[in-house]
Image 1 (cartoon, rainbow, N blue to C red):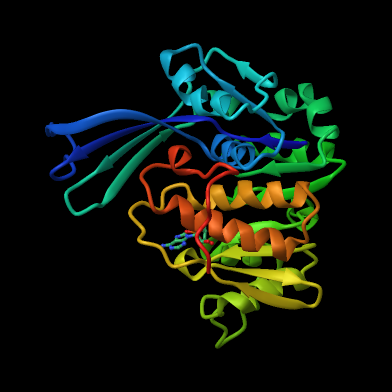
Image 2 (cartoon, rainbow, N blue to C red):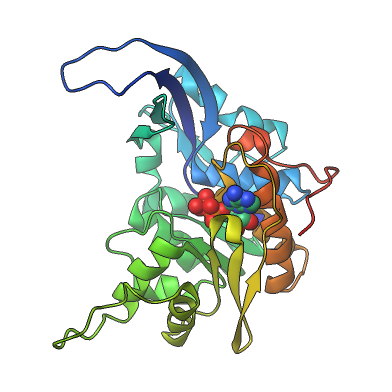
Length: 307
Ligand code: ADP
C-alpha cells in the first residue's frame, strides 16, 4: 500500500484578456473547477495505474470539497484518513491571459491544518504503508511527522521546498524528487556553497552536478525531473539519464505529480528505481497531451508513449 500525505485543492480557472491591475475589474471567461493539490494529484496518478493508495489530508465543509475529492473517489483512493475541518477547502485561483501567462493565488485553507497532530492521528495508515509519499504543500511539522512515522520507503517531492525543513528528512528520502530549481535550493541548504572571493555559489552547476552533489551530501537517492528532457536518476554510484517520449504537449500542468505517483506505483510493485523512473517519464509525457492535471492521467489499460 502507498500512503500519500499531502494537499488537496480545488483549482478555479478563469481566462482574461489581460491581468487586472490593483483596483481594476476585468471581464473573464471560464470559471470551471478542476481537481488539484499535489497530494491528491499524486494519489490519483498512482491509483489509476493500479496501486492501492491511502491519502492523509484535509478538506473543508464547503462545496469545493466534493469537487476536490471526486477523481480520488473515482480512482478508488482510500479517503478514510482525509479529515473534514472548519477551514475552506484548499483553493487555487488561476488566471490565464491571452498570452498564456498565469497569475495564481493559492489559499492553503484546510491543507494548513495537516500538521504533526493530524498526521500523528493517521499514524497507522503511514506505518502500514510500504511507500510513503510527501510533498511541500502542508505544514512543515506535518511533513516531518509523516517522515518519522514511515517504516517503509520514503518518497519526498520537495515541491515547494519548505523553508525550515529538517535536513535529515531530506537525506532519508529514497528517492528525493526535485526539479532543477528545487535541487539547487536544497543543495544550498545541505552543503552551503563556499563564500570566499571569486566563488559564485552553485548557480552555474549542470543539472547532473547538482544531483551528484545532493547524493554526496548523504541523500539516499535522487530523481531530478527536467520537463521534456526527462529526468536524471542516481543508480548505485552513477547518474543515469531517463528520456521522456516526444509528444505534442498541450498542457504540462500536473506532469510532475503524475511522474511522482507513477514512481510510487513502480516502487510499490518492486521495480528498481531506474525502471520505475522510466515508466514515470512516459506517464508524465502522457499527461501533457491533454488538458488539466488529474483528468489527463493514464489508467493501467492506457498505452503509454514510447521513448
Ligand atoms: P514539473 O511539472 O514538476 O515541473 P516536469 O515538467 O519536469 O515536472 O515534468 C515531469 C515529467 O513529465 C518529465 O520528467 C517528463 O517525463 C514529463 N514531461 C513534462 N513535460 C514534458 C513535455 N513537454 N514532453 C514530454 N514529456 C514531458
